[in-house]
Image 1 (tube, rainbow, N blue to C red):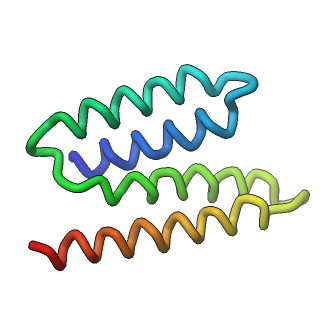
Image 2 (image 1 turned 45 degrees about the vertical axis):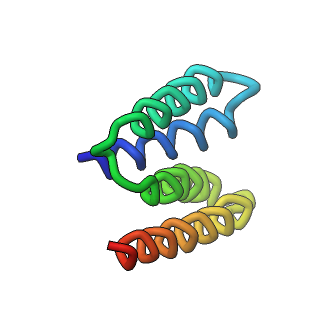
Image 3 (image 1 turned 30 degrees about the vertical axis):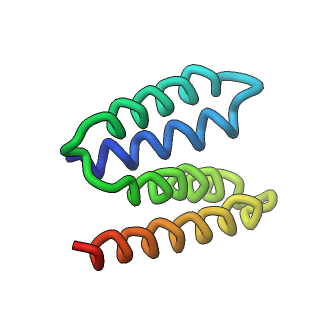
Length: 95
C-alpha cells in the first residue's frame, strides 16, 4: 500500500508540473504534501515507486496524443520507468 502511495505522489507531482498553467497547482501541492508525509513516516520505505507513478502519467498523456507527437511523452515515460526500476533494484539489493 505504501508503494502505491509513493506512486500516487509521483503521479500527482508529474501531472501538477505538466498542468501548472491550468489545473496543475492543486495536484502539485497534493503530491508534495503526500511525499512529505510519506518521507516523515518511518514505515513508508524507499521512494523508488515515485518515478513509476510519474511515468504512468507521461504514458497516459502519450496515448492521448497518439495522433500528434506521442514521443514527447513516451520518451520521458521510458526514462522515468528505467530510473524507477533501477532505483528499486538498488533498494532491494541493499536489504
